[in-house]
Length: 305
Image 1 (cartoon, rainbow, N blue to C red):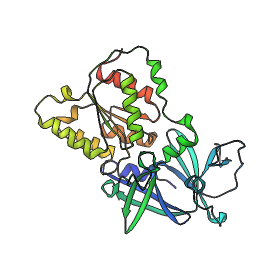
Image 2: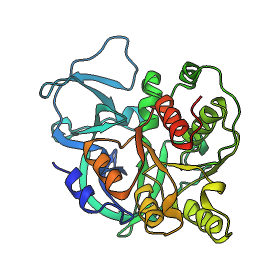
Image 3: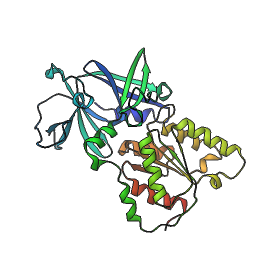
Image 4: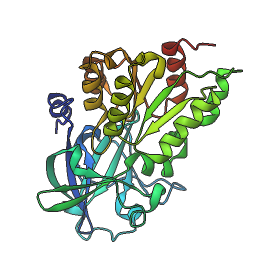
């Protein structure tokens, strides 16, 4: 199943493809940009003393892949029909995983404007595992936070703020930076990382639309844009307006096009690197490369120490 070609064709249009699947009769989704392929379920080798949500490992070709039992993770019933179950093979944050699901429904192309942040009370607040709720063709699709799932299962795969210490002694600076990130957890970690690196003037917003509104206000103030903001760090996957569409709008604006833009996303791969470069991103880093991101922020703002 080739999904990346489809994503490339639609870059910057504020749409995404969602692969819909079910577990115990419940409907879920994943951005197809994270999907390498879909495989029929096959027996796996169990791993002793592993996380309870790890079903085991298998080697479909030349790569050993860890299998995550999503039904177990979500607290749902296991499948009664393993012969029709499916593995969704993913690649994000530079790692491959297989997610065991019960049925793949298909792919739907949905505008980011049709995705909303989930109700915090119903979906577990800032620590919940749903990144968005998509409404499409009369049905609601829960978009799962696969990065959070993997980080919970394997904490070593997440962002480590301790890495900032490798930058050495830092002096405070007031280069204004805009962070565009819908995940409250990741937003806090990026802000904390930049703060530890000496940055004291950080603004954060939750999606591309909020960023675009904020940048237009800065532009319309009449002050030089680079005096008001030195660079922007943006995710790609965000409800209402995604990062690629935001970059497209910025680069089409005569004033805002001067703004240095850095993409910080789990979706960094060969194909999407090409998309980001085509749209005009100055740098692209994969979560959890926070140390490398801050080094680039230093370089692009002239704050190297």
